[in-house]
Length: 276
Image 1 (cartoon, rainbow, N blue to C red):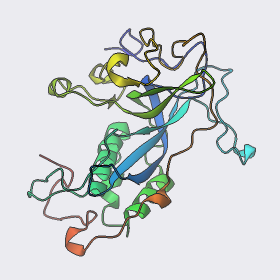
Image 2 (image 1 turned 45 degrees about the horizontal axis):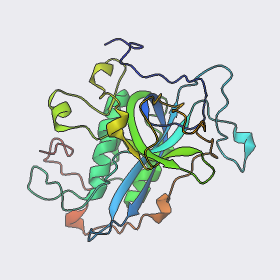
Image 3 (image 1 turned 60 degrees about the vertical axis):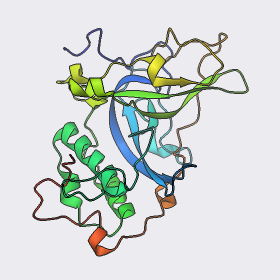
């Protein structure tokens, strides 16, 4: 499937909103953030990994959010931006087993996602090269942000989220995340992110499935990606530069015992990310 076909994404909109909203978009990763979230029925916290995504410049006259509102000298983002979770559900301990039959630590599952992302983005083997190098998971994430192994690599993403109505009558999209790919789609090779060359493998965006509507039934039949449809003639209201809910400092990571270290590389294991 060629780039720009009817089944492809689009980053240009009439509204030229600065926020990246649900849909199919071509983006690069500017940095990543993590936080631990305690779900009511979970015994232990889940690890959430968020990508700060930025689209290509939608048009010549587009001006994005300031990179740092406290320091205008840093300039503005060239494209639309948002924090997008790698998964809405987060990563959990004691959920997925490796080839050796042992459960994989949630931090290693997040690293696994980053490994696949890097390989798809530009073939970078940064994650493998940094396993066993950093003392803590927080250090590992900080090193990723410092090295930026996929800084200028653009991928196509299918993004979902929650639609919420604000008190002033405008609506916004929150809890953005890469869409969950169904078993049927996975069976035929569909993914929630992919390269230009494999755009045909990107799952189709379906607002009735990929948007959780909390606006009391406001129609999303005419959803148009970044611009969105109008609710009571009220457009999406522009927000300030997106902020991450939580920060790397919020991650309470205690280095595990040596035998359970998720960053210890087993020299006898060809692919530490090959999960059956």
